[in-house]
Amino acid sequence: MVTVKPEPTDTAETQELPEPNWSLVGELRLNLTALGVDHLADDFGERLCQLSGDNPGWQFEYSARGELIVMAPPGSESSLDETEVTVAVAVWRRSGGGMSYGPTIGFRLPSRAVRIPDAAWITQERYDNLTPSERRGTINGAPDFVVEVRSRSDRLPPFLAKMQEWMDGGARLGWGIDPRNSHVYIYRTGQTGPELLEDPETLSGEDILPQFTFEVRRLIFDRHTEESES
Image 1 (cartoon, one colour):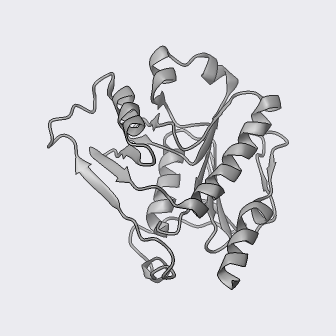
Image 2 (tube, one colour):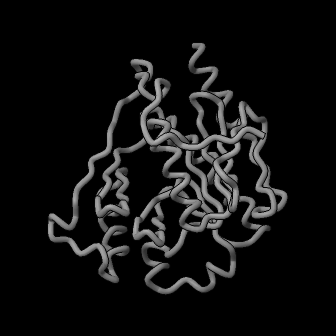
Image 3 (tube, helix red, strand yellow):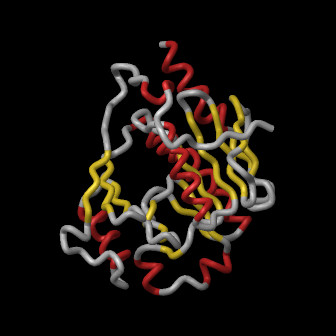
């Protein structure tokens, strides 16, 4: 088993610019405290969801350092990658139970950060006990299972750092899918650093999502390989 740890600074690999046809879209970070916005208010999660609803296509997250993170749409290819995972988890939960989510729902972590996953799942017990406020907006606590798909503009260290943030917040199983390199970083509770899988054919939901298998090579990696060769 190969394990890796996110580096705090950029590596040579992450400093390389994407191919010219890859859109380069950065993040905009705003200090809400400096703007007089009370991010500790009980209705902050609902207001964040409303902000997202009023600006279709854009994503709004909140960091533990008090920053509003504004992210542009990921692009058609990255959006398709996210959809493949989201649909697969949604189909599994019809028989496996619980509730699945796409990149439209925020989760408030113990650090006070509000993050949006590309795909997520929570147990049926958690879903049944969601408060009215959580059902309308942000859910408290990390999802039990979480997936992030690296887009073409994502640098690797922040991508892995977000995965670790999910795990530190209480997630039990996480997949960090990197289509650019056909890599998957598997995060598990109690595991020191993620396990790195190089061009795996399938991914397993293990004991968190029993009998769930995702064909990551066929549904994501092969398509990106064909595009790079064309």
